[in-house]
Image 1 (cartoon, rainbow, N blue to C red):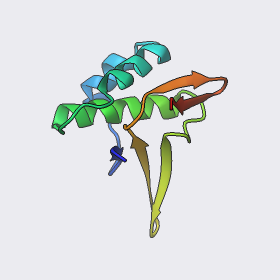
Image 2: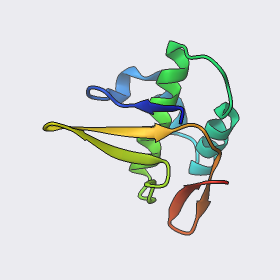
Image 3: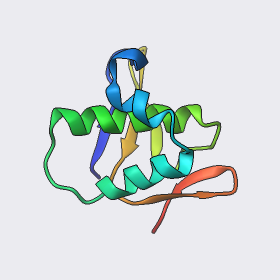
Image 4: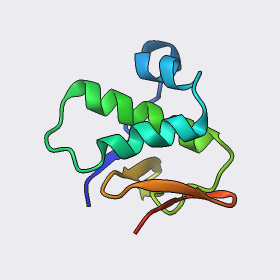
Length: 98
């Protein structure tokens, strides 16, 4: 399952995608995420964009556990976001669309 795993602290002021996307609606952020699903390859800008979207989704107050999970390695905790399927809002959750 393709995905992104967070490592280290996230500096919102240094991520241009976070600055841009945090001014958008949650629906617009979901559209940006869905437009990226199925894309091949990996590059720095894509990683930064997905990390920004993950932070926005986690901060939204919606339950994101269908596509963002907590990973525990020793005493450290990381978030992992699946980017293999499109997502949408169902009630108080953001879920993968099957």
